[in-house]
Length: 227
Image (cartoon, rainbow, N blue to C red; front, top):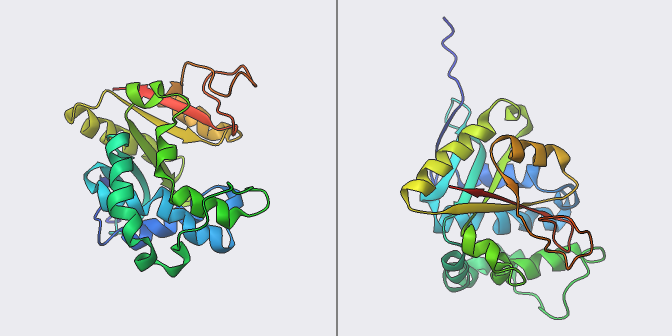
């Protein structure tokens, strides 16, 4: 019998796992953000805040040697999370990294021309997570999540295991539903989410431009699951 330790899912350790999961986010973020300054800023939007503010709803894939190689991170109550982001997280950003200095917030950045300004403005605008143009999303699915796994550990069942661990935690906390936002062109990701029980949000949310359910004005898909 092999003595090699097998990967498994466990709760995130906010201290030990912080740096490895920061690195996972940098390596798995959308292609446009994988280089330069935007890549250094991205984890502060899609990783760090969750591990700091709600670690009890964050799970990692452990490679069997104590190294975190993937994660699902979740805010169980998006309105409360947005409030904490503004009151507790924003005030410490510059102390975490000098790159995170608050930018001019108006006019909104043209992401095609200034990606760094775009991600910085997003970092300082947590209210965007409330999807104000469609309050029903957060009302019915108040939790939201991000999931990322290093390529060597993908397609091995860990995505589903991470989701199952999170769902159990959310159900015990009385959370009625969870949502996520994904790139509309990532068809493999959409197939994965559908396979593990998510569906598109059942409304047209891009002002009727596409006529597709759950596709927003930026072409992203809103995926939802009742718990």
